[in-house]
Image (cartoon, rainbow, N blue to C red; front, top):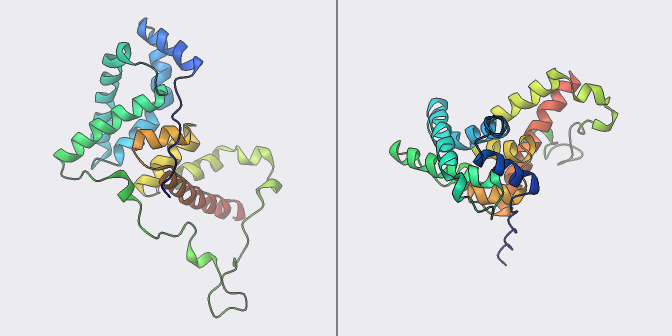
Length: 215
């Protein structure tokens, strides 16, 4: 049975207010928009083009597209989704020029394990398939430790090392706070694909944090 499509979120009241300020030429509103979305835009562009420098050019071109298209934006999707679609379209065009354009979903290796196999006991063990060491109980970690700058650095470093598709999805979902409908619409992937990519990405980041906490 095919997946039921997610209902795409329309622009929120907050976004509509921001949109009005942008259309009025409010520079602070535009600065806030850039601060909110630049990192995700760069991550999305980076999955389609060869280098960070080209991805940055894509993002700059996308911002010009955003400014030119503000008056025509009808708020049928969220502002974030609309912006990411602009990025994807420009990045795809640049990717074709670089002869590197591939479907986003194909960036995720088939059959990739969400958690490294060496974390489980082998077939010769008394308990094959069980964890060698159970994941740390994060509820026992003091709240202030979880928010330490060093912990954040570990998490962001782990995200930076993820395969492109996983990195983009976790950046959109967990860093920028996009909903699954926004991710699917912007990246043109099914809900099932984005859930698999997010699960794999979160598992890798969690493993990196466990190693960090365990010393």
